[in-house]
Image (tube, rainbow over all chains, first blue to last red; front, side, top):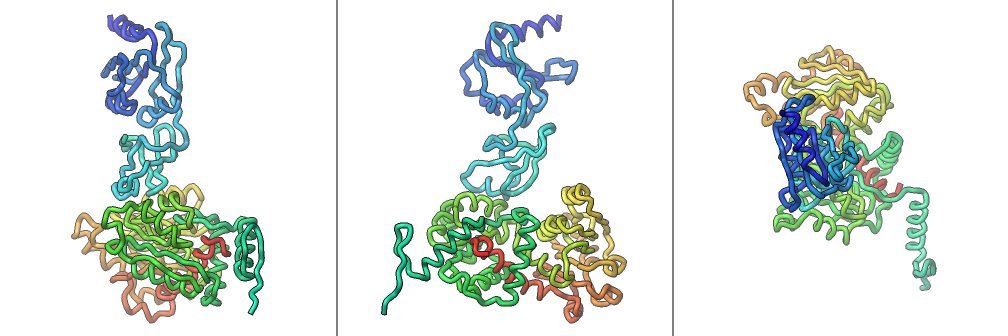
Length: 153
Length: 334
């Protein structure tokens, strides 16, 4: 019964993007990262779903929306093991592996209150030191940021 | 009286300004372009050695005219009399001129001007900007918004590269070498930016470290990992005694600050444990020298000052030559 329900949920998306295997505790961070609150497309969000691998997981399905590599790869900042499925006509036509770039601008806030980026109207920048789990480095105050301490802007 | 003039590249030059023009072009061709110095890691090992060699030539002849016609801006958003005077003396003794402020309350930042705007404005007037700021990363950001070279004279608890260069200069001058130095770092190893930068710089030179600090102020893991990765031996201790003092070439003392302790009882317990007294130096090596970034409070007893192994005041003077070398390097003049 449970399997049937799960199948139904996945197949309900005709065209669009499914982000699967999101850790339940950061599902809404991913929602915020992709700024889904301002997206007009149909969106289904499931959380605390049973997962063999993770125990509990979150899933986001966005209808008729396909993301650029750069937009979607941001998810790897907080959920490096999430899986991206591209759906067309109810079929998974592509599975994307998340991969962070070596450097990126914006998105994340430096947690150091004495960092210049928190005191000057400027964009943050980060170097990606490690990809899984993610470790970032602010090139301004030179602090390293562990994945669990990543705060989104 | 006739002044000879030279016409070149669509411009009319006096002989003197033509020579300066040719010199700047030659420097550019030789790759000696101006550049900012924000962190000690901006220098390679070879560049560090080259800066130290230049500092030695400035020590031999500290009064020169190499900065004639140059204007240096010293922007001290946070007061630091010692560092500012050292940089300003360095510029003045090389024939340059200094503009700037020694306290942010006398600058437009109190009116809410952004750092970006202050730096861009000053860049119209100065050939080089030497800045201290209470915010970490301020100098790196400043170097991104202007083409004028920036020298970081301290950004919060982050970087202070001229202190590291003068420390290295003092070590090389007193020991005759930088390689294979046994150095004990004593006091606040957790928050002390000078010990962190010095540790990073010394990793080029196969040192052997002793980290002596109370538990609350131990050397952070990240620096020990750097030592491990580079195969640099280190020993951590909480006791500051003659066992280590008698072993080392350099004793690098730092201030244990009361405000760093969450438990003031702990501070009272350790404050005198990390005080160096003259009698502790009785059996130390002849080549031992005691360094301290200053200001010192009570971590070096006054009775050490008369000992020829006390080097902290000479170390501060070396800062002048180190800064002369850094300024000229940043301007692409050496």
